[in-house]
Image (cartoon, rainbow, N blue to C red; front, side, top):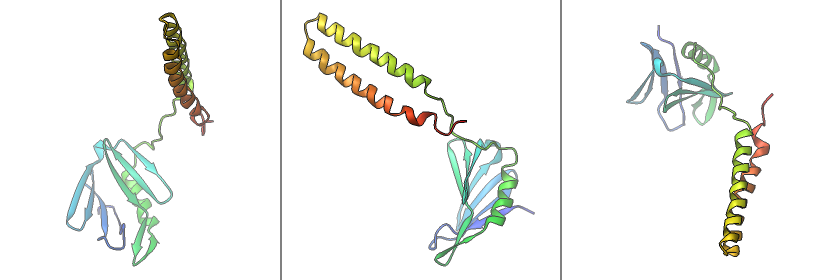
Length: 156
């Protein structure tokens, strides 16, 4: 027997049914049909009320809640059974955290470029032009430095 989960995404839409058939996740909504081969499954993002299946550039969102009339109803039992069957070996993905080291390098190289720009403009006799261009580059440095407090958040 094929494993399936169904939910009504909106009170005015027809019910959507997700079924695991022949190593494919099949989504049926009314007369519309979409197939997602499990061989292309790159990862799964899980949340409290649903999941997102990542198939390369394509995504499939499966909610655990369904509308019955105007109120949402919890269908966690069928959702969990379906997700256990689908995401057996698929990795749970998180966005990669690269840390602050590349940003420090970018800030340092841009500061060196601003100093060089100011120096070459002073040597050429265009001091005011050098100050104007270097100040714009330093503003970009300030914007890059503003990102630093959030880069290592959530690690450890």
